[in-house]
Image (cartoon, rainbow, N blue to C red):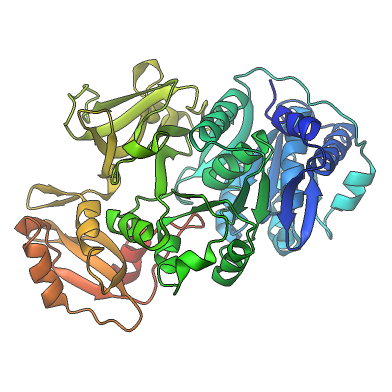
Length: 501
């Protein structure tokens, strides 16, 4: 088994079909596979062997994809770093993983050359690095068959969580990514005629597995943007170039501010949201404006997908992330690891082929991440209804304890999104001498709208228990976000309280 077999099969069945489009350039499946072969054979000539760690530190591009699959073909392991990392952030992860070779772009060369000797990097491949990608391609052969690996061998390492403390590099196996890609393709009914827009970073599980690998497995086409661009996105849709759209909640919020939105969607048939919980009100408004449902699943870097919500469209349940997919088991447990009954809130735990092998060079995190018999602890609070639909209540670490009462920020955020003047919001806990923590909310108003804290407070009091109603209302023009689009609540606390999260 080798994850790159999916590219080889699509190149065999659909050699002339477009595999990827980028800024007016198109590569067919045959061209993408041949370029991956050139990279693989060149790396082997350079001494790269099975299990070696090879870093990718660059934005989304055709070249990124060919390097990724070229590394896979050799039997080596692709470490996919965020292209936004710099300075100490980058140093922490490179020192932790110590890749033999790093593919990058010129903006990162200074940082990487400083790390080269201390971290044992043998070659930096970049236009002004030790070697140029053009040389690597010329040194290789277009003909090659991916080296067979054991299904449990690591294929890729994706870093997750923050950039402080001990890094957590999730080791994902060939079997795991294959199973994930197949499940996504199955539940989304992928075909070779689909064109998927991808501006989510390839270093992230959403971009790399959910969008890229699932599309390549089924012979569809990826339309790549380096990052979200509202104008370019609408232009591609209106031209009929996009059938599948993948985004995070904040982007759907922005699109809802576009006039005549439904007339600009072209051939779009499918919308999906991930990386953060999608407020029900946004799902409702999107369906009313476009006639298309925003679908959700549940998963995480350490294992995905776990659930899907829309294989049977008539049973799409707004607010739920769906039912457990085939081949995966899910349990709800308390903090001591005891199994809870249906309807009770607790930590979501799951096991199956989708689960990571473990964290790279991090035995302490591996011990705390699993219960016995391979049950992965998600860190998310959820519950099942009587029909087996899973609901995400909140992140365990985001829970606020005020006066001894548990408050889940997502519940408050869902109510706030009903308000017409609220564009985005984030509920956090502030330290409080009397209550332990007090509930606070950061709000971005919609253009032309004003926020009246007293009106909001009265509205929330009519819908929520008194202890859940925020005491602080902070109006902001923007919020710190991760490359995947998640609002970074810990950064909000740091910025406005001047303290560590």
